[in-house]
Image (cartoon, rainbow, N blue to C red; front, side, top):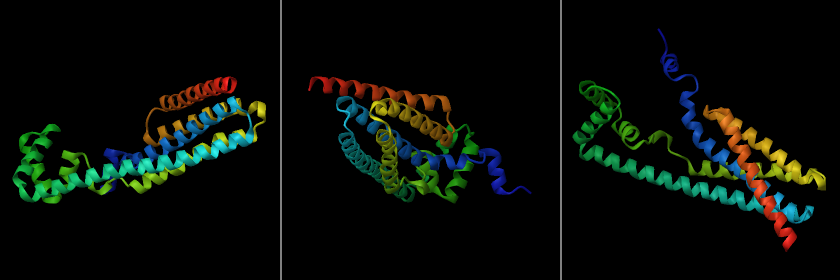
Amino acid sequence: MESAAHKADLFHGPDEAEISGRLNWLRAGVLGVNDGIVSIAALLVGVAAAANDLPFIVTAAFAGISAGALSMGIGEYVSVSSQRDAEEAQLAREAIWQRTRPVWELEQLVRLNQETGMSEDTARQAAREQHDHDPLTIHAKMHLGIDPNELTNPWAAGLASLVSFTLGGLAPLATMLLASESLRVPLTFLTVVVALAIVGAVSARVAHSPYTRSILRNAIGGAIAMAITYGIGTFVGVHV
């Protein structure tokens, strides 16, 4: 006889159950790395275009990394905390409704089941079984789009953003430190485009999405940002 896990694999595949759990970390981590790479690289090429002085560049880099990482971490924490507060409030209301109007809630679940393609008889039988098992969870998932067992974690999201931004910002800084004065800007462009392509490939792999689109979107966006700030830095360096 087949095990329950094996039967689940036949329908969902070996990784399907993990994808939704990865997406919150992926979003916070990829956004943090991308912002760290692009923000600090754009800042540094702009500064280098205006005044190619290494101590000035390093000072700008550390200031930018510190400010950006803290901003990303705090912003992500606040955003996810607000989302979690809203989810918990919805779940609390749903729990009250389950106690005060169980018949109405059962009929609502019947309608929700019918919207998935079930006949009324099948939908009603399924609704009864679902209510007997765990009415709050099934209503939260089908009516509110919330899984009570997988609420977002604001601390994890905030920390992921802070750390990933810092790591992303170190790539262009390291290039500026190691390259000669004449090669700082072109090598930073190259390093950043390659780094963003790698981040795009990793995010596509984790999310099971198309590689080419993700890689091109990351690399082209970063190159445009650096080109614009380089132009601004050149203009300011000439006219100030």
